[in-house]
Length: 102
Image 1 (cartoon, rainbow, N blue to C red):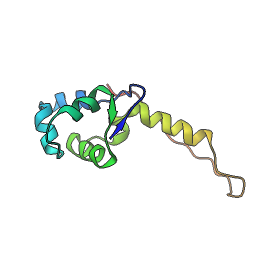
Image 2: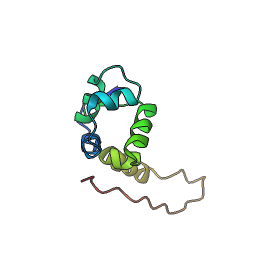
Image 3: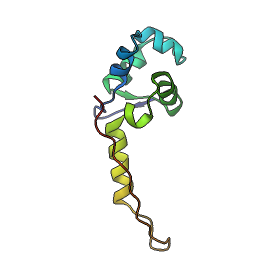
């Protein structure tokens, strides 16, 4: 779990509500004892560990890029802004940014 300095928007709350699940139920399904961390994930206060994020992706049947579009787009921009060194043959890489989740 990573406490974030800024709010990172995500679609976790929307996805959970679409599936008509309670925080308590989802927390148990992903191996948490209580729902306080899930609440922090949904509010963008905290990022889940990779293992937990993958569990949420499986549960909600959505790729991580759709669950965390803001983070995904920021990471895509970082990769595009820092191309490989000249020693590596340059190839144009196109990475499709994910649109904001509804």
